[in-house]
Length: 323
Image (tube, rainbow, N blue to C red; front, side, top):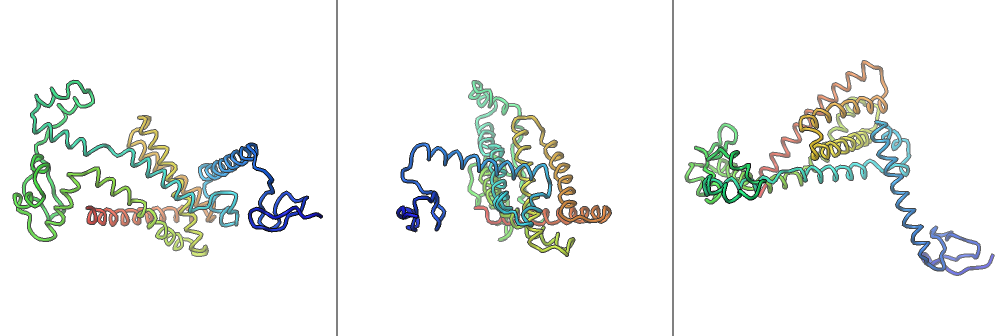
């Protein structure tokens, strides 16, 4: 065979009959044409989409199948558990963040209502139908703030004071004393005055709480199913939560278009995720029926306890660190 030059990628020797470099595998192209670029783009798109649909189809319609396939060594046919989990979690939190109401603007409108008086306020928004509802809805003059049983701001804080006075002045008016009392009161007042900022801070860090739950759920599964490796349980937990993220994302969209109520979203997510969990556990940890039911019950109780504990700690840390 005659030499056909060098590979432009790895500088390996090429022969006239070779269509691909024997060293790096790059296709031999003497000239990049428009047709070559089009083939490359379309090929990548359809390959990507086929892998996406194949992965999501198995995730939704074959509970537990992705976990079995990954543990059996099929790592290229589907997206890996970590990538799938992070991708669907990102979509979930983006949609969830878009559903947060504009609480900060509402608070400003309510304060303006109190400052201007009902008649003047209603006249100023008479030409704006979206704001006219506030004329009849706002019924409060003050906001109660209480934290636990020991830390309490004496007397409700007037909306005008909350909007205009610095926090230290509010402490003096309402006799808030002690380091912890002032610290807790300061954090609560900041959250009340800037609800959108607090919600944004909370949801932007919520993913860390979910990530922290995964190894704990893997440990719970290891206790229930000792014969399996710990990392096998981690893979199962990642796939299970990937499905939950995907389910909640669809339900959020339905709720946004008023096709489902909030209570229906909660009830549907609980029922569907419970049934999905049962099938996934049965496929990945086959046992006698009564043992399966017992371990599903124990896993559900453990999951709730872990969820409540992690959520409580996360809310506590978010409250303490909120600036």
